[in-house]
Image (cartoon, one colour):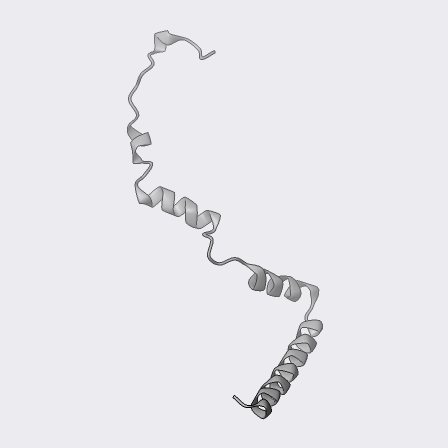
Length: 79
C-alpha cells in the first residue's frame, strides 16, 4: 500500500468515525445504554442462565438425586 492509498483510507475512516459519533450523540439515553451493553459485553464468558442450563443437563450433578440416607429419624436435630 503506498502513501496515497494510506491517506485515502485514513480519510475514509475519519469520515466514518465522525459519522458514527454523530449517530451515537443522536441516540436517546436508553439507546446509548443498549449500545454500551452490546459493545462492552464480553461474549466469551457464558451467562448465568447458560451455566445453569449446562449444570442441569450436563449430568455432573445427577449423583445428588440419589444420595444415600446416612441419617435416621432417631439421630435428632443437627447441631
